[in-house]
Length: 431
Image (cartoon, rainbow, N blue to C red; front, top):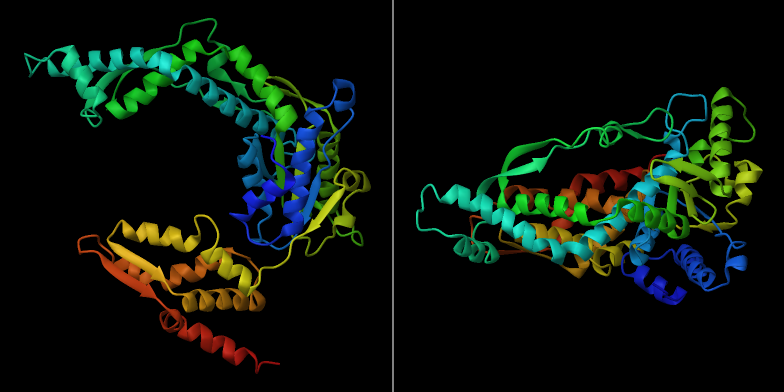
């Protein structure tokens, strides 16, 4: 998808309010990938992505920008926590596992695409197996039933909840990781002995999914999938490393913990710099993967990272705390806004929920004030406030009553937070 930077920012604006500098940075990085793909191979191999580090409080859109970006272009994307990793020699996850996670996501994406391509070819086989299973079930009680009638009923969706018995493959053994590439104990012996099958009872709806999965697998070339997935991960993969500030020690202090943190940074360095990582699907080069790191950097600073790692994140972006205006836009202007989500949930129980403009003003003002007085948790504060506002409505809605319209206005919100408001009014007198 060759979207221009302006088009990318326009798409991100539908879901994320503000943070224009961060949006511009990721939009340019994404467009540069397209520009690089149009060059000759000799020059293309010389151009590596310019990785990004984002600095800002929690809940302001750091993760969401990266996630929406990956979804926008259909790129393999993983979000990892920097604090999960330990340096080589310690018990814990090694940093190479983030690359293996990316390959797994890429494999799943390519496999789903291939299954979609062969779905029309295998559906007749799937329908035939479902008809056989339904015929065996119904011929006991309905003597005049025939397979043509069953197939017609199946197409019309009459049997979706019928319980049938189907012959399915046993689930593979779980994977284990021993400080390196995962080992699939089941697949190790596939070539030595045939896979076992077992009879299982399930609804027609779930049986269709299971049989479709099995039949699709027969038509997909796994070697081709692996090769395509590794290429996709190498050229278009995005890794979001969150909480990177937690593995950065303050430069003034020195302790064993800081040494361990520095060890993790040194382990991440070759991955970001460009290296080859072994996975069970084959080797993958990390040279052209886009890395986006993020952290609050309240205690440590970006400058406290080891110099080599700083140099691998040349683009630095500051994200700002959200204001009252930002909160109101989040509540009213974003695609699938949180107020729309709550309204949709309550509509299931015959409640037509509507927020007035002054109610949104009050909620936005309260979110800004609570973030100033307490911990700044960004847009996540809105969920806390809305849950309190709608608690009684959600609890009493049963769906057994006729459709009711409930209007949430400023007075409704203020009455919900009488005690909270009183607490903040008193705080201005505390020295």
